[in-house]
Image (cartoon, rainbow, N blue to C red; front, top):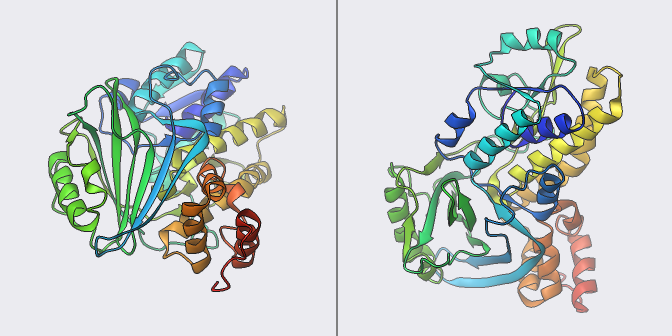
Length: 411
């Protein structure tokens, strides 16, 4: 149920493994391609390798793949504090999901998968469980997602941590290339973050996405009245001139790729229970944003969705002819949670005011290339960041080992 990053990845992997797979989507491939933009997802190399295994890396030779990674910190007074410049060990990329999902649906059908366009209601699920050996819901929003109960112990947010605005831009004074050729995260303490990265737009335009994450009520929270991409860009430039004058020159010549292509809204990050028991014998399993929905601040949404789909596919294959019962469903989710717990914690660390040891790590990354490399490569595999990103004692030991200088006792 659902034709997004996790649902299509799972369906294609299973079709390639000899399974009879049906994907039910509310929209056709053409409707997705011609529809409004989705959230831009930057995929790091481990995720791209999963796609390559399935023949899904259809833009390997056309879209710009980047290793550059910059992180800058400023103050609400408009002063630059410090910056981190490093590179990921292997490249990543961001492909417009409207283009990606359109092509993936066509490939899924070509491989023998059955694709049905239909509005699916919760009452339809029971009939599906009678028809199929396993039903997986990959709908991050809407009535199907709401069937899955919030996991209160694993959900750390009660309200949205950020207001989100996204547009697609380029520097058209330099048409031979995009100036936005690296991931850049510009953080203004107490205000929010601005994230840019190379973006391959659905009309074969190499540009950049601009994602603004504003702390509600803070000085970056200025987009409520902006009702068009042009208005958002104007507001963004005005805000940058005030809060980020040290960064504004990079955006001074930025222009829109599409006048109507923008996203605006907010959501509360949540972890949901992975299984919905429909009756005494029928149950369905959730995947992707249906059960783990994170803020995009550290770019993990699409990566987590693909990795979760891969874990599920391997568990399905390993199950053989045994039934996909509730015990198996919960065990399969828990297997992936061993990875995703670090992803969720990574997001939470940067949605909150940074702890002293986190500040120490970031400042060390600005001075020591090895620390910077460890940090930016952790975006590809967040478990590598732990425990030193989350624990003051582990951070002290890590920094002492990496810098050969005793870490500050302040934390």
